[in-house]
Length: 397
Image 1 (cartoon, one colour):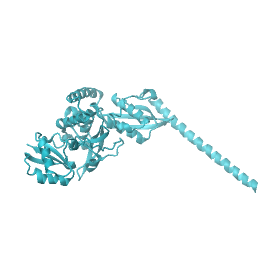
Image 2 (cartoon, helix red, strand yellow):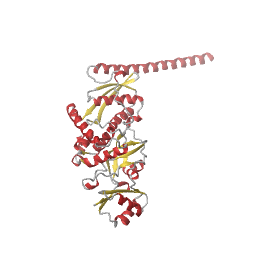
Image 3 (cartoon, one colour):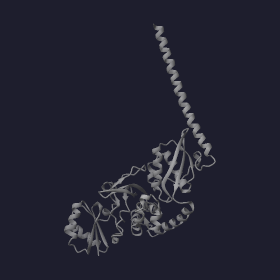
């Protein structure tokens, strides 16, 4: 009986060992197959690709967190891809690119691509469009990627000269000794008085046609932009002034419906703030005296939740909880509770301005100010414009 049991146990061990050997063999075969497939890809494209071969050719585009905010959240392997992608776009290289990349997941790759788009408005010839496929190759991946540009190289070079000249002209009018906040305000106000919303292109957006109005070039050079162009124009000028700034994509709601929108976040001192140049400029054609407006300038997460939602795109967005540079707090234009004496002091201080902006602690406080102060106060009142965030705009004639 013991001999039979020993025989059975022996057979079981041999079977288990054979199964393990077979499994390992299959895994090795699968790995060999994938490596062979990767080698075939290299051999097929070796005479026709442009891109990296090994680590020595990695572009050093300069991922500087002091300016490029979206890159901050990337890991070391992602930074390699980030720099490489920046290098190819900068070189206007939209040929088939063959990249040897560290092992990245699809989500990590998408995060890099979205981060490059969010960080680099200077690439006005790229709208974020791309396609790629990947093959495992030892401890790396072979990535075949094509970047889609909206301009050819001749047009890019011609526009680049014009854009650089215009940026230098705009920034030269800003006092070099100004604080970062003062420089940022000057940039915001410049866009608010020199850029018009491109309603004609807005009506054609369903066609998915890309134009200058979607880019920093359209905002800065043509003075005509959609929200994407406003956001990228503001970002590019801020970065050129040395102020960390990034692009955000999401939706904006008016309480009844929502639509795609783009805006920015900026870093001042150690805190982040949101800026929406488009929304501060949207009614300038109807109310030209209210340009530039600052309702959507340096606001926080609490206010963002009232009208905005950030899309499920992969570029990281930090918490924006700064209050020091909230426009209304910084300039003494915030009224928590209705106070006639405070309002009279503010009105007197801004009597030489063509309009007055005041932010209230609640809608009730704002309504009380309209009913009990601005309805009778001799402020040369022409009309009121009630905006988001309980901001009251008063035209002074």
